[in-house]
Length: 383
Image (tube, rainbow, N blue to C red):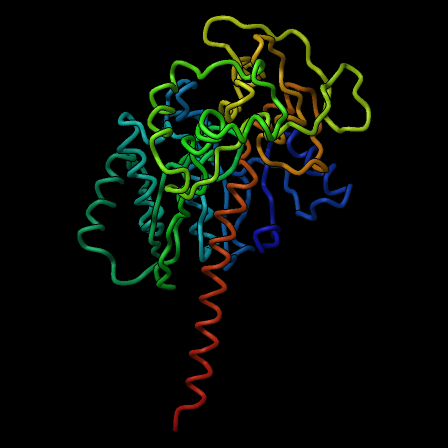
């Protein structure tokens, strides 16, 4: 909605995620038609001609933290995403997945996904394995079909922290526009940087002053950043034009510390039991958070734990995690802490989704204006 689109259908199979969506619809915060079902059983044909198809096929088959089974994983839903493209024939497609999809071991399969999106009507034949189908698709690149549905496809790995999200979240975004529309797509340029944050923290001190952190509480420059800070001290403070990365402290500064019976702030309840152990050190409060994750057997402790400067740690509340994913405070989550955190770990950071969808909406608006101008010019031409 914030990007200018209205939802024709939202398909989700997880019951807790659907409960969350229905609760927010009940509260008047969304008005989406929600379909709780297996996407493999959903008929997309009634939505033919929609402007945008957006989705995130499950990331676990390609996640660095997963089982790495890729196309052989039963959770691989890229075939369903491509079926939706064929049945809807949308003007734009926006897909999101983990950065692991770009690993060398998945390079052929990723090429397969991109080429199927480019030529969605060149279907896999009965009894044909995907490598053989990939060979036919690669042949189509050399000798493209003269007719039929085709898309121009772009992809890029984007770090949400570079766009103002208080979280280091690297994800692959695939954007495709229907070739007959002749639209030129460009990914947005970054607006925030780590150097700008380090400059505010350790060169000008503006970051600490803004948060009223005393010099004693700040401590010294972390050893891993000392050489970079020394370089920044030699550079002009105005030579980059980037805003500083947003940190956990930036995102949570106006939330009270949680307790086990927090009242008045939805989903802001303390989950006890956080501790540090090998590989699980939490997200430092004065950096963007580590990537929030959803695991098969609960949520990894390190990525969903807050680390204070004095060495204390505790789990993020669901509300705090929602802020790190840039959800509005009035959006509530249903289910246990574990299930709510799973929903958040599976979600696209709201500001990232809004940014990309807004750019797509802008492309479509420009297209409509061009069409209107063409009609007007046509009416003025002599018969």
